[in-house]
Structure formats: structure tokens, C-alpha cells
Image (cartoon, rainbow, N blue to C red; front, top):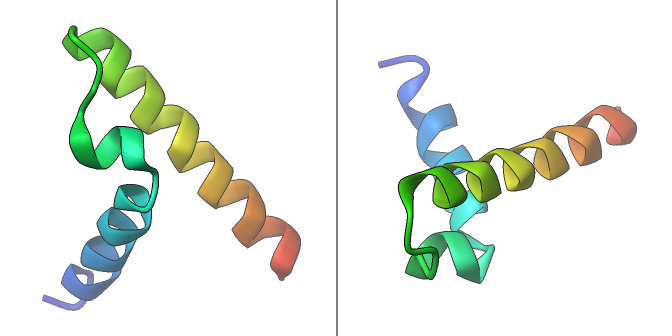
Length: 50
């Protein structure tokens, strides 16, 4: 349960990207690709902030 809140916060940050929240992509590959891109964007902003 220690990591649960971190994971929930991460998913909520991902959902800030409208495309991930509404799942506009038709195929699973394109959806997971965009989810990976938005995860990388979050990671880069976290790395540069510290």
C-alpha cells in the first residue's frame, strides 16, 4: 500500500492529457504509445525540477 498513492497520483497526471483520458486512439498500440509519450513528458519535467 505504500506505493499505491504514488501510482494513483501518476495515473491522475496521465489523465490530464485529454487523449489518454478519453482514449481517442483506435488501436491498443497507438494508445499505449501515447501513454508512454505522456509518461516520458512527466518524467522529464520531474527530473528537471529536482
